[in-house]
Length: 170
Image (cartoon, rainbow, N blue to C red; front, top):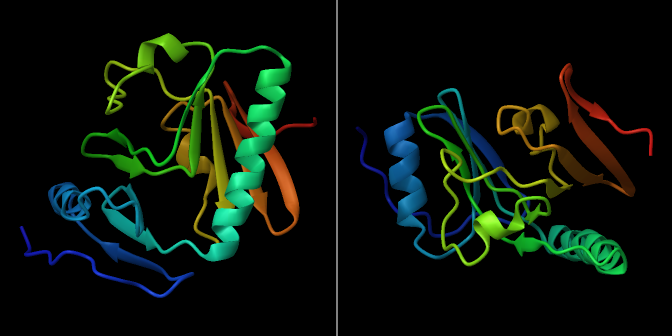
């Protein structure tokens, strides 16, 4: 195990990828305490760090609020969280901008942590990508049924099917 110093600061918009073990990723994630930055993504022995920009935060709020308005109009119950860390031990960890549980919202309501070994994955995640950090395929292994991705001025919705994750025609 390597010694990992706590992350103090990265410039806005920074993205860096480095090889790292699962144990070191866990240690680094814990060193942040309650801070949600930088955002961490771990997959197959590599850690990617991202420092969100002001623009990222604005777009994230707009898309999440749009989804909330749609769900409220439909009188749907849901749980909305941000930030949240989803992990598959020894394989992957990801921190979506927003997560929404619709069908199994009662299973996660009131929880302080999500454990995908016992809790359902979110039904929808919202991702804003201003720095080319987001790879839609990352969500396939987490079995997230729907991903709303805003990249530039385009909002795309991706759905998980038995054949993989694909752009929706809606």
